[in-house]
Length: 169
Image 1 (tube, helix red, strand yellow):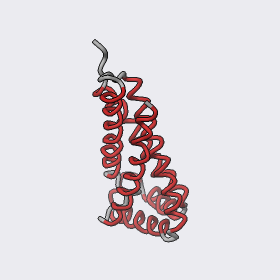
Image 2: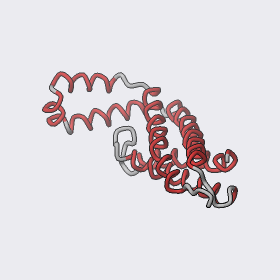
Image 3: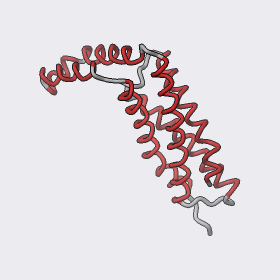
Image 4: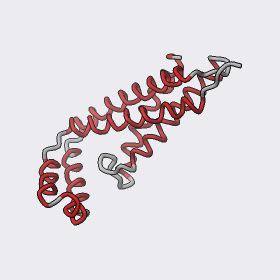
């Protein structure tokens, strides 16, 4: 079971890194856009699905218990997130403008929606949010993006494990 998950986990992590950086090239900031969480769910879910299907078909004679699916899924999204984390650390250490670019994009995003934000939360909260954006560090961004990957894996794993489980006759 561990061997099957280990085959898929690093590849999942590499794909997470690729999708993260491709998002910048198509004009979407994955740190700001919550729609990127959908891509994380699909990407992580796809690798968990293939790892569980591989284990079920080739290792376990067509049987996958729920706990096995959960274990495989946990290993895939945890190791995949660790690979993503390491890549993020390298990225933020070598690209000195990454945090400044995030702060600029987040400020623009908030300013574009300032009227709605002020109506819902008030002018004081709006100004506080602008101040908080300027206090963001690279470690905040690394932590936030990695936690999003872990949360996506946490929620998609039980769904896939339920779909693929099959009890012996």
